[in-house]
Image (tube, rainbow, N blue to C red; front, side, top):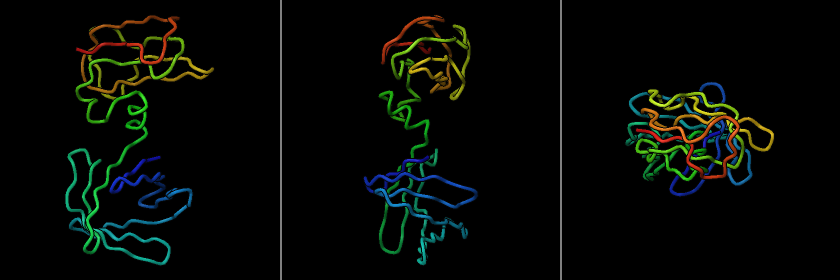
Amino acid sequence: MLQIKVNNKQFWVAIEEGFDLKADINGKKVNCNIEEIGNGRFLLRKENKVFELFLVSASEDGKELEVQMGQSYFKAEIQTEFDQLLGTMGFKTGDSKKLKELKSPMPGKIVSVLVEEGANVKAGDSLLVLEAMKMENVLQCPVDGKVEKILVEKGASVNKNDILIKFA
């Protein structure tokens, strides 16, 4: 589920096959479709209406967009589930490139440590398994880098925001 902010208004969007979208906008379910027609132009179909969109600019990662529809301009910020998880841990997506520590997102118990000190890791690699509320949560690496120090071991109890791993 994507979280999309358009001009500071928040929407939740699930993408199905292709460009079919199901959005929950203020509790209202909306089905729509986006079709790329070339040269940065798209057709947005919502119910019986068709809107032509033009992509004015996009950030390198494609998560910040500026779109023109008719004479109106919109700024959109897209957050994936991973971006949203980072937000619940107190980090912004852009901060992840500078992140030097992995903190516990919740209290729990370390079930396993999946990396060793000195290991080179990439964003998305599994680092630890944390059991919380009878569920096992795999904590993934938020950055490309090197594991400098592991501050927990298997069986350790941790609190929310405890530092688990430091990156070089």
